[in-house]
Image (cartoon, rainbow, N blue to C red):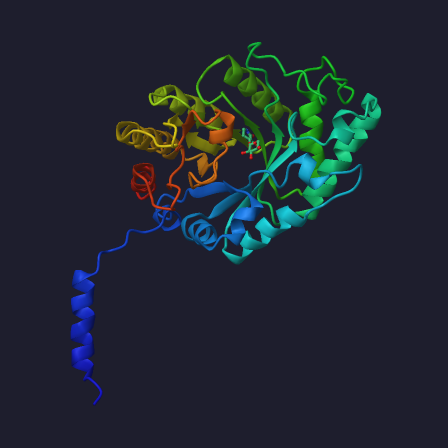
Length: 355
Ligand code: XIL
């Protein structure tokens, strides 16, 4: 005999009372504050069911960690390979995630044909223009924001541009003329997709310091002269458990006041790990507090519109090899995709309405 409707209702009520209420994933928690919550991913990760499921469940923004860099996208002169990046873009579309593109002009992860090609400035300028227009054109209407230029300022010489193939080695023809090569990149990207948001992205410029001062001057100049820049990305690779969050907040404030958006683009908080890769529980507690403070700093400025981490599981994080395995455990989920205290801290901030 079929159970009556009433007994169904009763069973339903009981299970409602006893089942643990599973907390909302990050992307749902962020609906109230309206901020985008994102992560970087490598295309191979999409083949792992636990990885793909976590990515789709938690994030509404994704950035290819390496798949849109020069060496991957243009492995030979004029020879483009979009296969890895297209895979991530298709995954994002399927799961209603926005895409940040990273990155069109950088001094690292460039192919040998480019770095060792001894091209004269004029030719190099054509190569860069063609790369930017081809890549941005390929993803026109699908990549909502681009890191057009990455890490152009030098941290060793305060406020100076880094000496790179694009600036002055030999450069694209503007050597010694400040940020004018960066301006070219923004104009080319804008021509290729006028609707994409264009960002300048950098490291170690999170706080008010000589490097962020120099970026601030450039962005102010670009805005005054109508160079198409929409935002600034602060990478936020943090390796201290006591960052100056007041200075970070003040820095976000001054950039937003220029009329650009701020994205936190590559956040991770590396902690010391033992030989087995394990951190101390006290450090994990402090790490959670860092995530909480940075997220709160971003949310306190309406123009800070995205928080993105550089990967999401400690199973795949660049920090291990980058620190020769002395640091790690920098992300929101452990190596078994279990949420850490950092995850709970971030979620609790995202859930709040913006003040
Ligand atoms: C890193 C990737 O995470 C690694 O997989 C790769 O081997 C090296 O680059 N700043 C950036 C990112 O803008 O592109 C870098 O990503 C990390 C530092």
